[in-house]
Length: 156
Image (cartoon, rainbow, N blue to C red; front, side):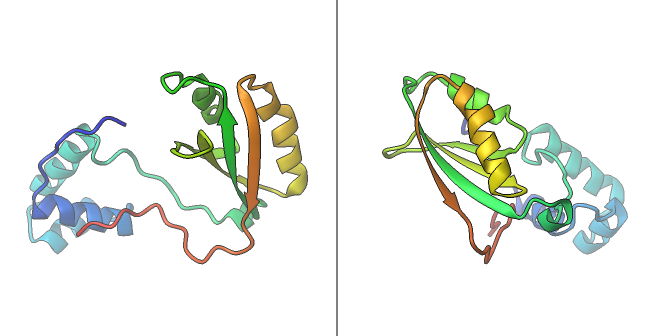
């Protein structure tokens, strides 16, 4: 992700806070909370979307409701050069993989995945990860309990 400077004022930051809290808030309700006209609020939101400050909207699905109780983090070491992202793209293409992070340290990537259980984890490693030629090693951490999980970014 390339760093670019985007100037956000207090109104933009308030919009972002409110949309993170409730992305389904209507434009009229958002405008009322901001004490602005709905047309002005809508224009602000559209500009934030155009600048990719708002990258999208999604529903937070309860993993238990869809039989995805197992949360794992997998540290992966590859023989890729630092400039090569072939392995990262291959990992990102796997549907069960929720996040791919290129990290510093002994490993190259940190993967987050939600699965139905140990059988799906083994199948993921055997059928998908094993086909990525540059993987040297994997270390898997299984989450026993999640105390906090959020996609919200703190906006001061």
